[in-house]
Length: 170
Image 1 (tube, rainbow, N blue to C red):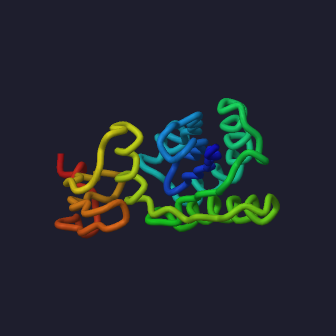
Image 2 (spheres, rainbow, N blue to C red):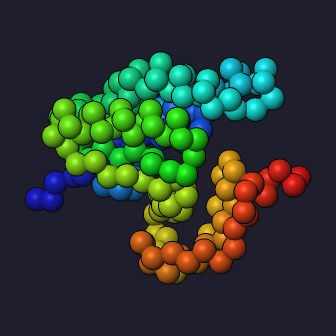
């Protein structure tokens, strides 16, 4: 009998702390998001230092809630998968440091996830039958990419913005 694989995904690349439990790479059992929109609204945009501090305050509770919603415990988790970039350095540092500490304490593998590749991989969750090759438009925060997905880990960036997301032009 094949064992199910449970991953704990940790996202802290900007102003939202998110933790998800995913079964076998395609079934999302939980996805808990702590938003900082109201905190940053008064400044007219994300303040990196404030975002980092809020990640520190939220990450443990968000993780606990994600595990509870998925009805699993740390012992069920097979790998810890934090976003390592791109994003705000301080915000990323919080998620990666937390993930490294968990992986070490739980003796679980640590698998870093590229933020842009994570957006691409999310398509496999939404569209279970999707297989490469295909074209993917990624519009995320300060990043816009048009990517040729040749295989699951083989990508070719066809076009991208240099220093900002296309959404700002609208």
